[in-house]
Every structure is written in structure tokens, then in C-alpha cells.
Length: 120
Image 1 (spheres, rainbow, N blue to C red):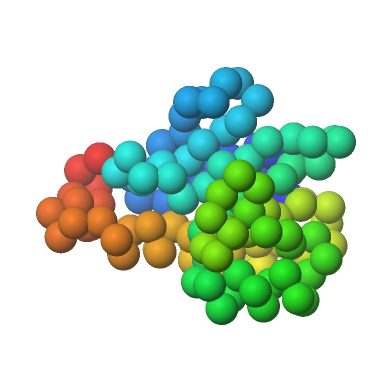
Image 2: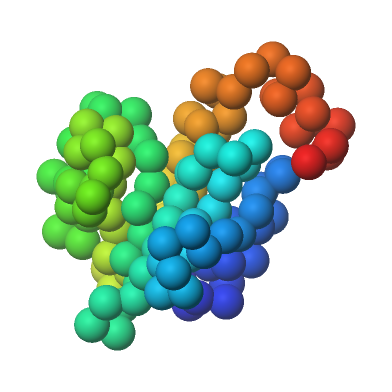
């Protein structure tokens, strides 16, 4: 997945916003001020951190060599995925969806309702 299509997919999530709180080299995506993804480019490859169910996080690491413990994140809940084309884009999108949904799950009832009504 290329940077342009990655940005487009991440921003397609309801109420998703793109920010640069750590400098221009790290792109952060939030929903209702809660991060659900961040990426940076290292050695010419995009590396994206995504939230996971703890069991899924471990399973992804066992299945894919390009999935490692979340860099600078809680390793129980976050993975870093190296986008080296070894994982199909469909799987990457499923991982992104899971991360977004896990973050939205933890929002308040009011915030969830605002997302449903597209009141960002």
C-alpha cells in the first residue's frame, strides 16, 4: 500500500483526522482525539502502528514476519506493520478497521453518537 492510498483509506473512517504532533515525519490519525494509527517511513518502507486485540496482536506476529511489537507503544495492544508488500492490502485494511473499531469502542456514548451523525 502506498502512502497516498494509505492516507485516503485512514481518512475515510468516520471523523478521522490527520495530525503531526511528533513532527512532520510521523503521521498520526485520530478519531475524537484518540489515536488509532500512526505511520512513518524508515529505510524506504512505511511502518504503521495499529491497535489490536491482544490475541490478534500475537497471532499476526506469528503469521507475518513483517508484523512486530508496536514500536514505542504498549506491546500488548499495538503492532507495527512494515508495509513491504508481504501482506495483502485487504489484510492491512482489516487491521486498520480493527484498530479504528477498538478505539471507537472505548469512546463515550455521546462521542459514538456524534460519529454516527458525522458530527466531528
